[in-house]
Length: 100
Image 1 (cartoon, helix red, strand yellow):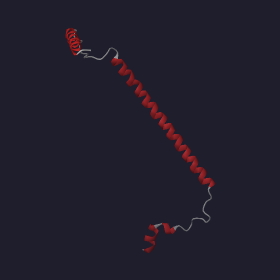
Image 2 (cartoon, rainbow, N blue to C red; image 1 turned 90 degrees about the horizontal axis):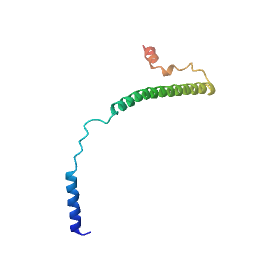
Image 3 (cartoon, rainbow, N blue to C red; image 1 turned 45 degrees about the vertical axis):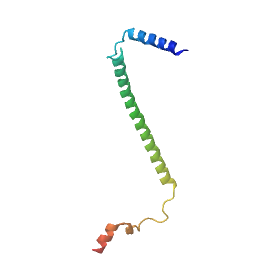
Image 4 (cartoon, rainbow, N blue to C red; image 1 turned 30 degrees about the horizontal axis):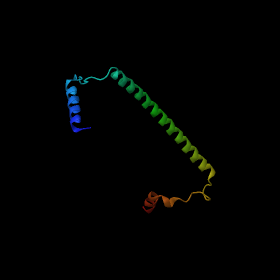
């Protein structure tokens, strides 16, 4: 295309754009927007409660598994060979009172 032709096309296009009616700016939300926002907020609060309920059940299950594992290990592992009657060396308070 020749530069003169491009300029004339551009001038016609800008003249048509200036004559076109200006669209009013949107100052309000689209219809139904408030209802959608309220519905989403209501759904979110229910889902938050469901989330806490699921997490608490998982925690309860995990605590049960940990307790069962601890009891199983306590039963299956052998205990000390000798009874632990001679553990006075672990008690620093007894040492203080024995020296008085």
